[in-house]
Length: 120
Image (cartoon, rainbow, N blue to C red):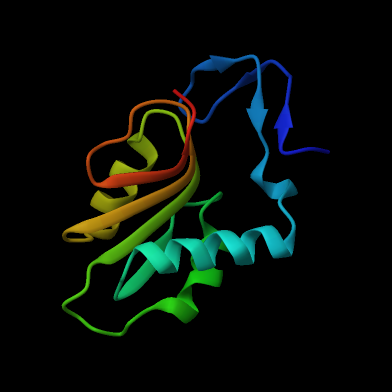
């Protein structure tokens, strides 16, 4: 498989797309490096991953937690289309003042979420 796939798919958001970003195909080294880069830009007390795409990134980011309760909580996901999954997750988990990071954003992110790679 490959990271970018030209395929008709219905996204988690319910939108139709003619391509898919398959982050499960990132190598262990890819994930480690992306997490390292996130840790260089953001300081965070703890980290949560939005199921299912954000879980492996949250696990790898735990070693970068500052354990300083004054730092924000990081919420991560692999691909953002509308941001609703992250917004709902933060509400469900009752996470105050989160900062969010996604690997790829298919569209505009809410102000509290930063994409590593912005598509348009």
